[in-house]
Image (cartoon, rainbow, N blue to C red; front, side, top):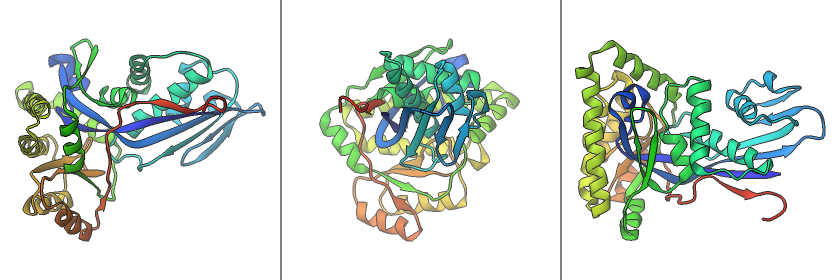
Length: 331
């Protein structure tokens, strides 16, 4: 049995500028960070001549083409798996919650299959192969941020040129700043989710319907805010970083009418009234996790949002990316 562990991610600046409808014209730049919330994938050989798949459902099928789960089916095809396998997946957060679980699933699946087949694979290849499956084969309207964050781990600046080429640069951040950032970023589960591909498709449609001077102006500003956020993180100016999160969220809400909703707006206002400097919904929007930057009054904000039914979800950063944690022989 092979077990891979792959981290989920949060975005710290420039989110959305990796989407092809923008990056293919202007290039994208963002800051993303892997966190210690994971997707686990197990792969083991099947003695029977069938494929057994366990996720939120169970499938037992005779061949790969009969698999309903899109990501599992295409990963097995992509890797040219010839012998039947049993696959289990476990995620530490619900799907559709904005932390990049589909990409983590795909990266973790490919990592486990490569290991089982005896292949040495780079983190760059894992990210690119996962991107090919999600974006090129399944035609999902997403960018490459999630795949790279899950594969590489750490806190990175990710730049995408107009040809889709990605450059990953670890940011120059001190340990003290990392510790302070972990302590002051508070994340709350809202209790409702929405598939990111729906929201991203709406953004793409809006971009195609409006003039470049309209919708793309939002993304130009978001990219600028991301670069400013990078400067703040590298200089340790986290108070300004928190303020930039607020600027970013107010700008992002202008992209789509349902990027937020009345509940999210009320929770965010409550957080600001009780000491948060800024925040946003993590991921595409419309639900999932509300992340706040808070330097003081942590317990007050936890209490106030807890009374609203939000679940405080602590996390730390992950610096390993997708790894094999068990192979039945060496661990």
